[in-house]
Image 1 (cartoon, rainbow, N blue to C red):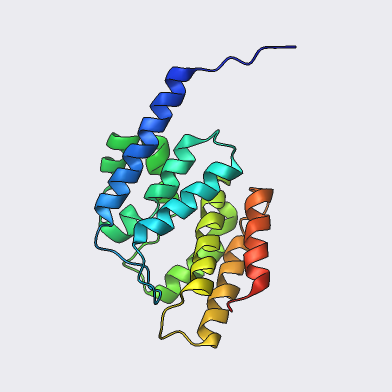
Image 2 (cartoon, rainbow, N blue to C red):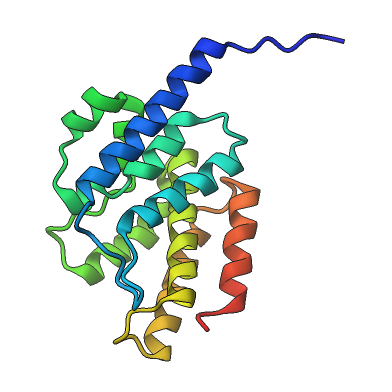
Length: 187
C-alpha cells in the first residue's frame, strides 16, 4: 500500500495564510454588521462561507477558503485588487474579483447580472457563490432584517435559487446544502 506523503511545511504555510486572511477580513469589516435583527458581526458570515468551502473541498483548496473569507472586501470595504494580490496572491484576488458586484450599478441591475453571469463563472467562483447564498439564506431564516416581510424573504430565496441554478455542477455537497436550506423556506 502506498504511503501518503504529507508536506507539513505547505500545510503550515496554508494555515498561516488562512489565519492572516481571517485577521485581514475581521479588520476590514470591523464595524460592519449583518442586516438581521441580531446584528451579528459581519465576520461571522465570512467565516461561515469559508467553513462551507473548506468542508466541501476537504481542505484541499486553501486559496478558495481564503477567497471565502475575503469575498466581500472589494465590494464592501473598498479594498483594491492589487492589495489582495500582494497579500494573498493573484489566485485569491482573481476569485474575489470574479464574485464581486459592481456597486456603481443599481441594486436590481447587480442582482440581474448575478443570475445572468453565474453560468460563465469558474467552478471555484460558482462554489463560492453557492456557499455565500447558502449562508445568506441561513441568516434570513435565523435573523431576518426587521423590515423584511414574508414576501421580501421569499423573493430573496427565489432570487438566490436562480443564481445557484447557474452554478449547478460545481459542487454536489454545496448544492445539497443549499437545497436543504432553500427547501425549508424563509421561515
